Length: 309
Image 1 (cartoon, rainbow, N blue to C red):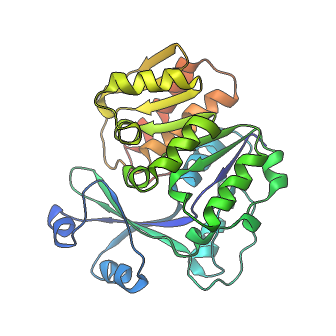
Image 2: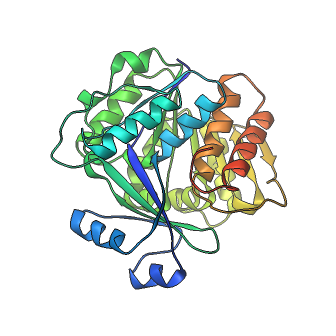
């Protein structure tokens, strides 16, 4: 198998809202808020019209993108044996992703992410992790990891306790480790741990400019470049309208964004960028070609609603 993704198995529920909804519910636009109270989360959903429901989760979206590009891939993520859990598994199988997880009835329901899309196409996420956040080392198959050329992890999954043990087991058994920092909220919450991962345990790091700037507390982008050069590992930074840059030791390669796109929804832009880049990487394309493939995939997904092509 080319790549095995390990991440939060979350069902995405996409709704269109206006800016006042974001303000009234004390949400921060374009960021993710974690809900720990299931009832509070359900209250948000009550008055909303659901546009689309789809199996999601950041790494799962990337893995589906890789499958659509013709790669043999798999995914590990924890769901419960409930309606959303069944939909989740069906959604992956339909996309030819091998699912390495046997679901059973859990105390908590399958995780859900409410994606609120405002008129400017920005997305604000409200996540109730449910059982996804309770992943433990027994949920992670060492055999599946060892048989994969690479594992791809997400920062969203990392947490103290059981998820950390699952993370460590995955990294210790992997041939190559790639990870996305996921979200500035995650970076700020787990800064020392993420810094240790980037410096000592990851072979490939994906981040956007805000995430990596926050991680190393950089004052400007040249500090990000210098930090990345010293790592002597592959670091890929997406920079919105400024395109993307890949740094590998002294090699620095930049790529511009595609122009004149009809942008409808930015959900999944980073996930599909990672899919395109990793497709190039595991198929031995040049770094420049990897960046171009990532840009092409993210450009396609933002011109539709939802995080999967």
